[in-house]
Structures are given as C-alpha cells and as structure tokens.
Length: 405
Ligand code: PLP
Image 1 (tube, protein in one colour):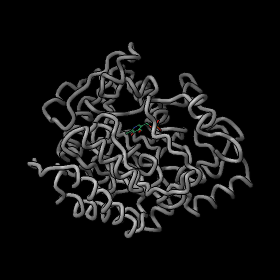
Image 2 (tube, helix red, strand yellow; image 1 turned 90 degrees about the vertical axis):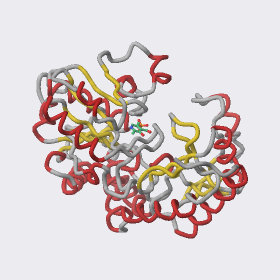
Image 3 (cartoon, protein in one colour; image 1 turned 30 degrees about the horizontal axis):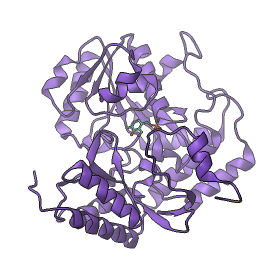
C-alpha cells in the first residue's frame, strides 16, 4: 500500500507475470548496493538487477547526467537522423576505448534488440542466411534472438523460428569445423551467463575467430551481460585477445537506464545505409536521456577504477565461499560469478534463507543448481563481507561435505 494505492493488488491483477511465482517484493527505493522494501526492511542487492546496476543504484553522476539532459531535450526524432550531443559523445567515448574494428555504434533500447540488429547486419553484409550458435546460450526473447538461444525448452513454444540455425556444443574446438561458407554469422557470449556462468578456454575463442575468418562468417560477441567491467575487463573479449566483427552490449551500459548497441567496423556497418535505405530503423534507440546516463556511467566506471574492483570481488567471493561445506564450485570471472550447490532443492532453500537474511541472490535461466553472484562493482567491502557471511551460514546449514570436481 502506498499513498492509499494497493500496489500488490494491481501487481496481481493487472501486470502480466512471467512465472507463477515471482519474487513479488515491493520495492520503494534503491540506493547504492541496497533495495528498500515497503515493509521498511532493506536487501543487499547481490545480483545488480541482473548485471545492470554495476555502479549501484542511482549513482549521483548518472542522476546528474539525466537531470542535465532533461533540461536540454527528450526524444526529438527517430534514431540516426539528427545530431544529438548525448548520442555522439557516447559513441565517440566507446570508439576511443575499442579497436578500429569496433568503432561505429548503432544504438538500441535493449539487449535483444541489439542482437536482432547484429543478426540482420550479418545477413545483409554477407548475403548468406545461416547462423551458428551454441548450446545453453541466451541472446534474448524476440524472435531472432530466441532463434539463436541454445535451449529448446524456451524455443519450442514459439516455433517455427528462423530456419537454418545450427547449435554447437560450447567450448568444443572440434565442433567448429561445421562453420562453412553458407554461414552468415556465429553468435556467442565470450562467457556464458544464463547457461550457468561458463568461462570457455581462450584457445576455443581463438579457434572460433580463425574458423570465422576462414569461412567468411562474421563473429558476433554478445557482451550484453559480460560488458562494462563485469568480468574484470571493460569487455570480456579484451581478455582473450580475440576481436569480434560485431559486438552487442546493453544491461550495465546505461547505469540503470535502458540502452544497448551493436557495434562494428565502418565497412560492415555501412551496409545499413543503402539497398534500401532505412531498412533497419528504430524510434527510441539511443534515447538521449539513456545515452547521457550511459556516457556518465562509462566515465564513472573508468574514473573510479571499478574494473579492477571486479577482480577483487572475485577473490573475496572465492576465499569466503570456496572452502564452505556444500559448495561444489565457484564459477566465473570478475564479478560475474556462480556458486554451484549440490542440488536444486538445496539451492532454492539457500537462496530463500539468504533473502530472509537480507541478501538478494538469484538463479541463471538454464541452471537450477547455480546461484548467481553479481554484485555492484562499487559495493563497499564491509557490505560484501556481510552478504558473504549470510551466504556462508545458509549454505553450511543445508549441506553435507561434497566431493569437488
Ligand atoms: N544477451 C545476454 C547474454 C543476456 O544475458 C541478455 C539478458 O539477460 C540478453 C541478451 C537480452 O537482453 P535484454 O533483456 O535487454 O533484451
């Protein structure tokens, strides 16, 4: 209940649910690493709105940038027609941080829309139709992105999707030989997120790059979850030394505001200009308020050295939780981590117990034994330590010692 309005009733009656058991906590505020609830309690946010709030909630620099942009203008024209300072500054800042092959941005609103753009761009550039993607991948829920998402349980209700998609096992060099001259693009996450926080062998990414270059298929890295410092590098591809032809980003990009992009080279991106012109347009992509927020968020990420903090988060999480009885494995890199427990029921109970203890955790989409740990990169160490202690207690209460892999 808020100012006489029954939020819970409206949530139940008038908001479409995506499962039968949403968390259903009533949020009245959020600041830094905390969510404030209607019952007066607060939660440590250890998942950052699923890898979005990397600067914590309502970072002052992001709020300032939003306010300044509100005073200038909101939406003025569909994307790509007018020169809008917020957009072009962001595009230039990104280009200054990326190799020449990734110097041109097309802004979107969301991650899935960035992937749609990348897939269309690859088809138009190569004149080919087929795509290769990987088992357990997640690329979004619109028709194109879903077509390359590697879990049939999510695709089946919506078939027929895009034909000609081949799914290969992730991190398997031998399987790459099927990438041939009919493939327009290969799309992958450089670290799988929803598939259960899976870090591939760097040799696999190198082999994938070589196979794409040999066959003329474009390589798309979906950095929607891994991007903007989450894995301890600005973008995960920078750790592997493998540069994709197209990169997609979103989530943490806007510092809490909706924005995404597909990013490529001038030569590849120029295919969108002609034959026909306006064949890939968007009304709200790169909204000026989101673009201003994203530019400020990127500056904060660099100025406050938060990328190095992601690495420190990893070592603190590993040293607190790896020795715990009941923890099978801690997977991932930087602040994109997953804690594997013994079975689904223990995992569910541990997450519930942490919630009761004031720590918000979650699952990944394709795994029920892995608990996602993705704190804001600027979480104070004392808050992280407190959250890790709550997790440790919850896990140890539930578990017998396990055999580790
Ligand atoms: N790609 C990856 C790797 C993601 O993790 C997600 C969302 O979780 C998406 C794409 C889809 O992004 P959005 O929900 O903004 O459409």
